Amino acid sequence: MMERINATYFVLLGFSNWPHLEVVLFVVVLVFYLMTLTGNLFIIILSYLDSHLHTPMYFFLSNLSFLDLCYTTSFIPQLLVNLWGPGKTISYTGCMIQLYFVLALGCTECVLLMVMSYDRYAAVCRPLHYSILMHPRFCHLLAVASWVSGFTNSALHSFFTFLVPLCGHRQVDHFFCEVPALLRLSCIDTRANELTLMVTSSIFVLIPLILILSSYGAIARAVLRMQSTTGLQKVFGTCGAHLMVVSLFFIPVMCIYLQPPSGNSQDQGKFIALFYTVVTPSLNPLIYTLRNKDVRGAVKRLVG
View 1 (cartoon, rainbow, N blue to C red):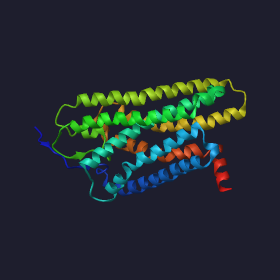
View 2: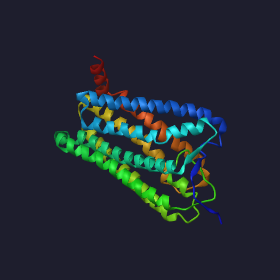
View 3: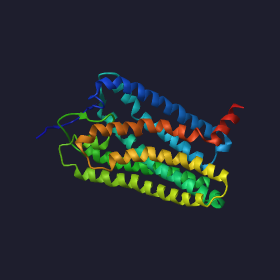
View 4: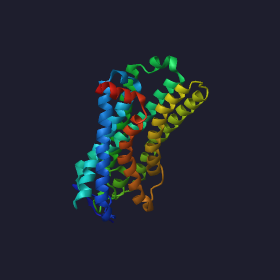
């Protein structure tokens, strides 16, 4: 039997199996992190300063940008330190704090993307009732519900993970602290924890995804009935950007959390996780702003 330990620190193995890649990964992660900071701060500041962007769509987009800033900052600085130097340790307290915030913000993003799809559904399919359906007070309630649900779910998982006794070594086979990687260090049967994780992952991933796809199904039917070319372009501009963001986030998450655990796929899972945790948050501002006339107009008004 493995000896039970009282961990004071963990070793994040990360990409130790590819030491020749660590410098390259450091540069890539740093570039994407700077893009994430710049792009999302730009959206938040612009949405605040320009009164034309004081709409539900940009309110939720600002929430998404702030969420991505917090999400990436919760683990990327630690990842950069681990990639740059030989030391790859993180304290037990730091690991549990990171676990809590990464999980909380990830779940919040799933719910927030679902809320944003409802906003697009109301704008396209119920335009005459849009101002009533998306009243500012209701928008704030939806945003608060997204954040509260994510942090509550994370509190549940973090609490059960804290209770799991750890055995043997302190090596976490990932580049940040996450529930499955920590459960692999346990010296007891963790099937109950894994089942709880699978159920809540299904709730926070599959249900939002089904509702998002239902919203876009209704939007697609409404678009097919449209006669105005200008209206079609506006719908594709706003809905297409959101649908692309949804795809970039949900597909990698499903590949990791909604499949049975397998030792053979652990290394592959790290690179998939690296994509949706580092690359996707940096692409969101570009996707929403490059072909967005509202944002370009706001920039011109601000500069002018």
